[in-house]
Length: 66
Image (cartoon, rainbow, N blue to C red; front, side, top):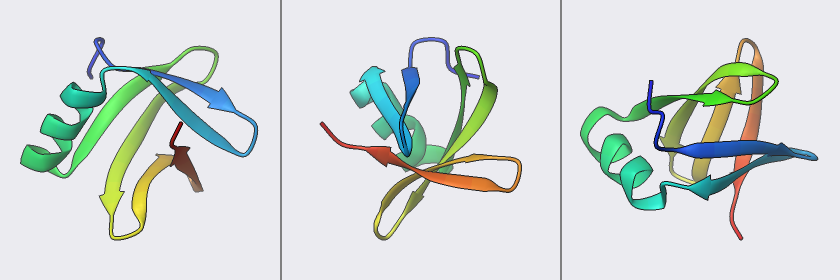
């Protein structure tokens, strides 16, 4: 789990607040990252052809860009 990546829930998706470069490096090397989201617990971030997807259980939501 990466504590230096900060993600929050924002309506119909998630927003990356801190750790853009760290997330990019982790996804480039591993293909996925597990991050703690306040109030929700751990989520998995996957890199796809259309962008980043945040998954938790059966739910898949986009990682929204600024």
